[in-house]
Length: 131
Image 1 (cartoon, one colour):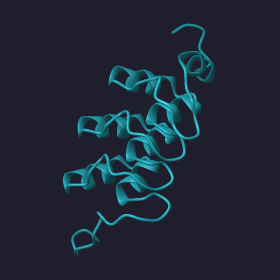
Image 2 (cartoon, rainbow, N blue to C red):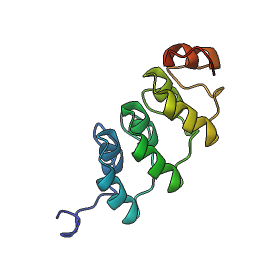
Image 3 (tube, rainbow, N blue to C red):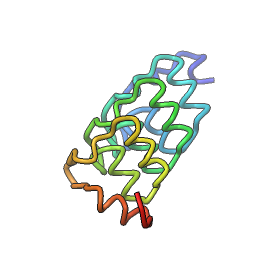
């Protein structure tokens, strides 16, 4: 309804940085699809999580992550609370998402402001016995 009445969803600011990042943080795939369809940039940076992909990775929203990746989200953008989407997913132990991000080219050696991640740490956080 807001979009139909001219609301500017591109405006940045606040805790999430953008409407897209707020929707991804909440796992709202339908809203994420709508915003991307209206031209939202999946790589816009700002807010607590840095990017929409990092917000979705923090929440473990695999369907939203897959959608963002299909729409061109960069898996290695740095910023926000966790540094990268891979660091957010590994911190919370989302092994399936860690694997997906690695398959899509996430660099496990990228260091963020608050996190330094290595393969051993990913495995320990994900509670797995083999990689």
